[in-house]
Length: 153
Image (cartoon, rainbow, N blue to C red):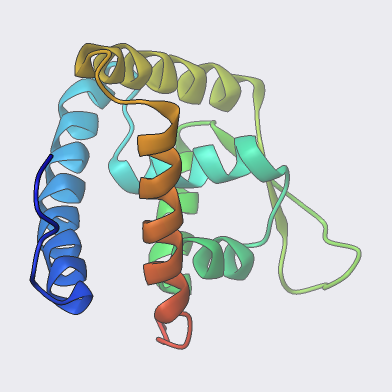
């Protein structure tokens, strides 16, 4: 049995941030390497996945959900629309902010990307338990919540 790490929790949480940045950037690169099959950038992939998970959303809603600027999300949405992956529809709740929805082609494209990503994740191996993943999600969620007040626009 190992002795507990004597460093303060704040130092250990800083290690989490030190890992999350490179992990995110490498995951982005992997998506971009594999995405040419569907012609998707990481930003377009994020828009498609949000719509797949939540149904039609406005650009501001997607920006808030992903902590991205409305301008960036609008560019990614326009790119996705140019590829025929999303469509704009009237928003009964707000005349100036259209709802964005996936098209059938968008559903197929994000499905293919997610299938490939899951194939990569299966390579991680069996030594991670559900408890490990639950703990990771709990810690990352708490860190994200800590930064809820950061404005992204």
